[in-house]
Length: 115
Length: 113
Image (cartoon, rainbow over the protein chains, first blue to last red):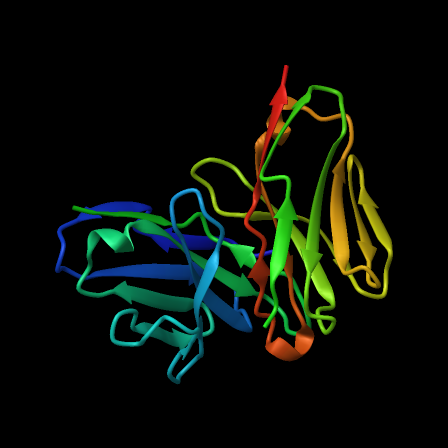
């Protein structure tokens, strides 16, 4: 498997501000994903981070609110823009090391609270 | 699209007993079914997975069974220990969907000493 590091691990932010979350992997991976986990809930896919091109967003998530970058095979960022209390969640990065129906491996997440 | 249901939502067992969590899925194209364990303050950790060409897989105290006809798969934990206490998520995926996972709502397992 891979070692997946997310920064920050937690943050408390004011409404209307933006926060960028980083996901760093210790080896090259084929796919990277961003999930949201609301308190006590399951995981919801936000988008697939595509290397060198625009991310692929799931229904209900838009680029203006959650811009994503993936400049190379080991790094991605998710920005949560113009935050409101409803954005308080855990944001998780996951990776697939090789293609072809392989498992996703998750980082420990970023716990975000909006005041 | 795919829909995954998971039962029960909470489960309490005595240490040493067995625990069973069941998931059902809707899309017959799904062919990969992982199980994740999430401890407090941590990300989900893969504990076992199964593909649609296999009916059962076992890894020490953990096993997963798959019934493709009925579209359900189950996690079995034997000889439970307090450290098994966590939230467990099942997921379903189809290769042709680019490894997009659809997760179940989760089961909170408590193992009582």
